[in-house]
Length: 505
Image (cartoon, rainbow, N blue to C red):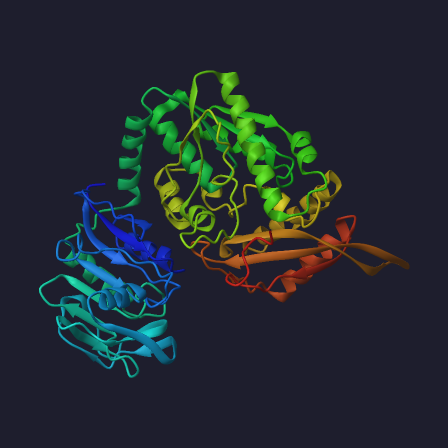
């Protein structure tokens, strides 16, 4: 990339949303930890400081020296980022009388290039407990709200701004315009696109990999499929794809996925490892342990296949940005381990190549379309690497997996029949470790419960439960109970993320 915006991440839940908004404005950006600025990189055109879960007055708050950045590059501080710059420059940040959270309207906006085209009554989104009470001498207020005098400021003699609201969230009506103005201030050409990503990524892969051979983990999903096509364009016959049947796939998925890849001209090896995974997972109920066992199993299988093929030096993976965020939080909190980023053995003999690791799911889909891939591969719902292993709560057995596969197959098939599949981000059935009393015919039953999950989202960082029609849910429930032996009750999950996650484990 010949130009980029750096987003310094101070730990906010919306840092990734800032990145998405900048990308949507056709500008490449990278999110890096708050103390890892890439000094010496001539392609950096500007810097955005994110929010944070901390107060700037907390002893554990993330702090960094900005003297090498301010005055040299345009800087935009958002929420904590704005408060940190004010506090570290001699201003004062104090706890507000009440937590400022939710919608607010600007009451005054002074003429400033950051607010070009933004009206005085523009709605903004607040989310902070502290507020700037005293600005440093050379900081001037450029926007206010009824409760926040210093809603935005500009530093005299510098291209440095701070806003105490979140322009990246949907509720800030002119937030995209503000970010666009900042990119104009940075002099960005705004020419980043799926096409330019493909062009630069293929060139980078050619340079990095040379004549080396790569083995790639295929899952049948969007991420690994797009990764395969990119690598195939870069190194052709030096790419070998491996699709592992760990016994936790959807019904008939092993055969269907192998057939799907025929049109891509990929060299694909199918590996039946069901018994190996079932044995390793026997009696394991802890979800984090299940994920790690499945992840290690994947890596072990790939390592073995690599040795069979000889001269393999790289392991390709379809890791995307939300995987990285949830596995490697800068606050030290791991939400959950992902099979393609966690638990890599220290003695593994393969290097890792992950061309999509800085992309969000919607970006990956746009790139797949640009690559000319079949629509059903691009529109396929996300499916977790650990598969049905984390949609079956409790210990895993082949018998339970069969029950879940059959229920899930009915659910997904009917979503497509009712033209609901493309309106939902992700859907699947979950087998609960709960049995309940039922009546079938004249007989009492005591059988399993299936939970149905469907969410709407754009990037998997946040998600709302899908409001599926009642008549559809009723028909799915009847179909599952009537046709899946061992199930006598179906429930629907109406939890959003946060506080719940999309998957149950």
